[in-house]
Amino acid sequence: MAPVTELTVGQVAMRSGVAVSALHFYEARGLIRSHRTSGNQRRYGRDVLRRVAIIRVAQEVGISLAEIAAALQSLPEGRTPTREDWNLLSTAWRDSLDQKISQLKKLRDGLTDCIGCGCMSIDKCPLRNKGDRLAKQGTGARRLVVES
Amino acid sequence: MAPVTELTVGQVAMRSGVAVSALHFYEARGLIRSHRTSGNQRRYGRDVLRRVAIIRVAQEVGISLAEIAAALQSLPEGRTPTREDWNLLSTAWRDSLDQKISQLKKLRDGLTDCIGCGCMSIDKCPLRNKGDRLAKQGTGARRLVVES
DNA sequence: GCTTGACCTCAAGTTAAGTTGAGCTTGTAG
DNA sequence: CTACAAGCTCAACTTAACTTGAGGTCAAGC
Image 1 (cartoon, chains in turn brown, blue, cyan, purple):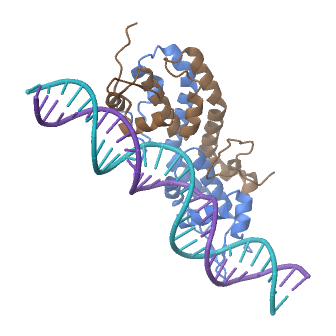
Image 2 (cartoon, rainbow over the protein chains, first blue to last red; image 1 turned 90 degrees about the vertical axis):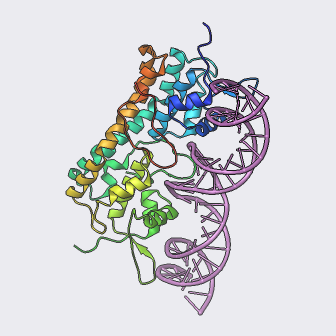
Image 3 (spheres, protein in one colour; image 1 turned 135 degrees about the vertical axis):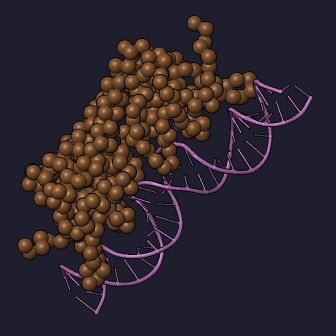
């Protein structure tokens, strides 16, 4: 149980593929954690690689850092997440992920299929994603307003 | 073939759920198009609703306006897109959409399943999305660098 | 004919997610 | 022991995607 080699920021950057500045940034945002050496340098446990991997994957599919941060709160700061932790995280996200997946599919298939659906009128178009409550907050994105 | 009621920007905003300012913005970015009345006010054809719907859906799944704009270039400015147009657009996007979908699934299932995979070492983790070349450009996001 | 609400333009502000740079400290290799 | 790569902090800049505001125009009702 000897603490398996702690990582420096540079090492984490190299192994995770994200810039050092981004790691600093994630830390400032509470997405990852480090402790400091006597000389005030960051040291990371191996679990940080896992976290970073999740962060990147989640980001690429359009989840904001804020949302990711919220989800990651459920992972105990400090230790390598257990099966339970992961289950919590994944169930916390599953719904919204499912929705995004189905939106993507709708977009992918809808673009092609919609043509056959006679939806010269947008109101009936499958793209109109009814029942969608992804709750985009902040600056952009209000919900579609047309009902029925 | 009488031109079916042209829409004002306010009407489009209402029906699409997008702010007027956003519509101006999309127009400036070349995502949508209007012609002007003698009094310099915008008038939109009904096809704009379709376009806006696509824009929003695509955005919510993490496609940038620039990418959307590029894809929409294939839709002829002016007339309501035909079956052919949509096919072009959808095939242009299909690959990247497929990748995003599979990433989402990986994220969703991976979060849970990864636990059983013994990946205390990140290198074998399914989340490490190998073979993924979504080509995120611009400010953020380098690719993961760790190989095999 | 005037008022009021929708429009118009253009500039500037905002949030997210980082990056870049300056100025200073650490730690390791020769 | 000293160079120099790697770290550290903090502030400022960047891009995307809009919003807000100021200052002015258009049109439909009374």
